[in-house]
Length: 136
Image 1 (cartoon, rainbow, N blue to C red):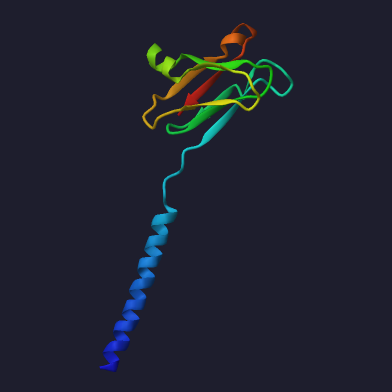
Image 2 (cartoon, rainbow, N blue to C red):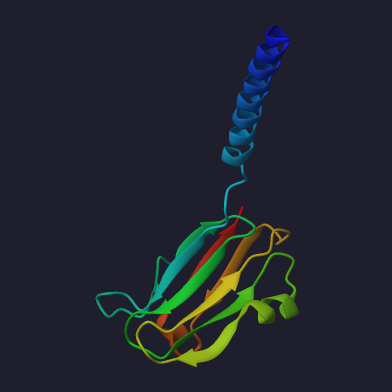
C-alpha cells in the first residue's frame, strides 16, 4: 500500500511540473502588444514641422500628436488608402491645440487599410507642415 502511495505522489508531482512548464510557455507566447508612436507638433528648434514627419506603424498601433512648439497645431488627414474622404475625416484631429504637451491620438484598427496616410497642420500647411504615416 505504501508503495502505491509513493508512486501516486511522484506521478502527481511530475504532472504538476508538466502543467507548470506548459502554462509558462502559454504566458510567454502572447501576441505582441500594440505600440504608440509620438509625433511632435513643432520641432525643438522652432521650425514648423512634424517630428518625425514620416512614421511606419502596424495595424493596431496608435500615433499620438503632441504639441511641442510654435502652436496652435492640429493634424488633418487628406489622403488615405482607397481615397475615402469620410475615413480621412474620421482620423483627423481638427481641433486646434495651443498648450505645450496637449495631444491627440489616432488609432489604426487591426483591419486598417495598409498604405500611406498623409496629414498636415491646418494653420501651417502653407509653411509645409505635413507628414505621412505608413501602415504596413
